Amino acid sequence: MTGLDHVRTWVFDMDDTLYPREQGLMSLVQARINAYVVEAVGMAPEEAGLLQRQFLDEHGTTLAGLMANYTIDSDDFLEVVHDVPLDGVEPNPRLAEQLMRLPGKRYVFTNGARSYAHRVLDRIGIAHCFDGVFAIEDGDLTPKPAPSAFRRVIERFGFEPRSACFFEDTPKNLEPAKAMGMATVLIGDGHGKPLGDHIDHIAPYLLDFLTDLTFTEAAA
Image 1 (spheres, rainbow, N blue to C red):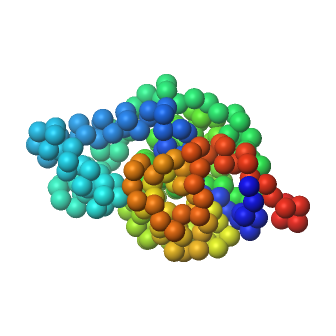
Image 2 (image 1 turned 90 degrees about the vertical axis):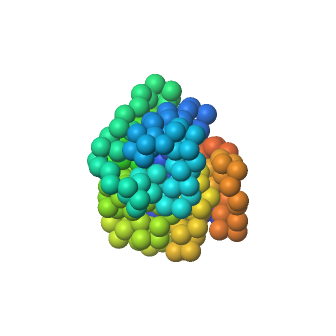
């Protein structure tokens, strides 16, 4: 696959992007989020689940929705919901090889907590592949898809959006990236959400996409 010869900055979402969704890590995090919402808002689990999904759609993360509507300890939320075992996440040396093959800088941009992100990257065996990690704390808890979160990432790492590519499993999180000039790649099926022309490429798995990437000799 060609078409990304101009890219010199590679930005990756983490959960369900840098590892396959089938490994089930996010379902563990989701279960802890649901339990936290039940306790925080005092609702029955089914009602709390609906509220949590509403927060996710309207605010980008459950935490942002809770903070907008309730008084909660954000540090406690991040610690509790991300305290999950990583047994199901498989080390992926082949992915490390493909990431290191990419020309330029590589970054992680996640709505997850900083400590959790580093745990996951270490578990996969790809932490050394990245030049920086931008977690939810780095954006003062403002999550994707807020354009301000993207602007902070660009400012933090100092790259030109038009020479960058962003990889994500959530379609709406690719919209600001595309609007700012980045190439966009959807990993997975979009979780049943609407797709659009802001998505340049779609691939079931990141490793397959990166393996198929070729670069012209002039751009190498």
